[in-house]
Image (tube, rainbow, N blue to C red; front, side):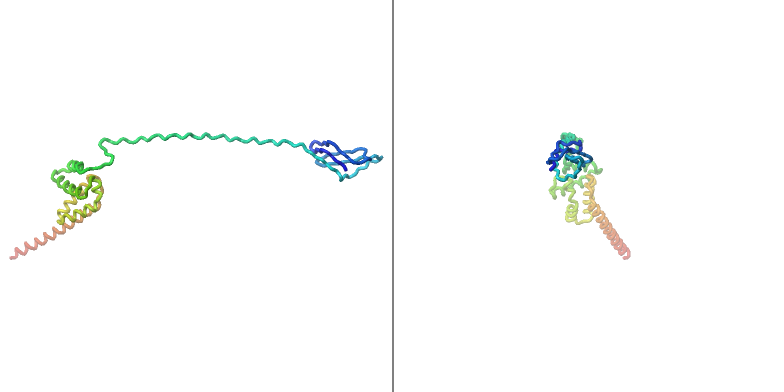
Length: 218
């Protein structure tokens, strides 16, 4: 048996060769491209080259230390510090401006008298508003006038004469205009009663004309 210890093809070196035979004169070794060629010289005149199969090769390649990859430390992003929000400046109320914009009956009376040319007309409008203010138990004109439909129904029950009802509705419409409140239902009602009143007056005039004509015939 032939035993070869520590063969190194990269450096073309062999540590030792052991051959169990009495007629061995020497050996020749050739290492080339990971190929191993062994020639045994025996104690004869001619060199005998034998193909050796019974070879025990102990091959210990020196272990190379693998380079250790150094961990790539990613640069830490600096987290922005939480900034306290600055308090927003609140607009200061203008002089005379109220927070809730509540308009009491007395305050509306001053507005009505200031915006109405004739004093008697202002008093007539105010009486209508005062009655509604008490009936609906309100404490704010804005809240009262928001009940447009209920107010119209109440006035229609109170005043059966078309001319009187129309005057009450017109006075109420003046209040809506002064406070810049839309009142489409009220405006349509006024137009309706005006047309009704006009038709009634035309009919009365026509009947009066017929009566006069009959009287002149006698």
